[in-house]
Image (spheres, rainbow, N blue to C red):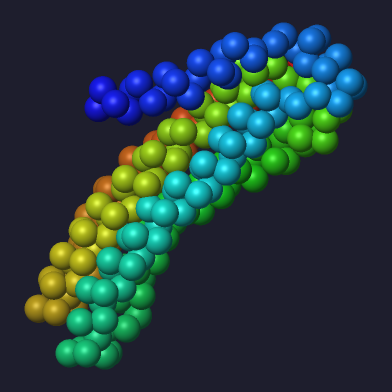
Length: 194
């Protein structure tokens, strides 16, 4: 834990040293210099999709492995198994929606029409982190619930509704991370784009 905090601080020191106000960034943009704020904002959008996608990849894979075992015994449950496999896949979609929200709402920043400071770029990066971390965590845990639910379905296929309800409870926290990122990005838009 201490090492990761030290590494995070070491990564932020150069960023803080390079921080500039929007007016200075606008002058630097016209001079052809790098916009550090934009780089951090784009990094945040990429992390939202990439990290949330990893949660979905792990979750769908784990559920698929459990489902394959169930389908060898009871192939007639394919529809219910596929439904359970899809559930952990939604986390990647939450991350992608946040990235698309950034791309469409901050198009003027991405195109270079509006310059942002490094602190504004870091704020956008921070806005993308709740969805990334909640989804990378909830995807595999939701898959564990779905996999356990496959064992329930093996005994009684009428329990599918209960299994989906249990899995949806885990997804609630991915949804909360998505909402926090969504509202943060929308609120920062007012301050950045006016």
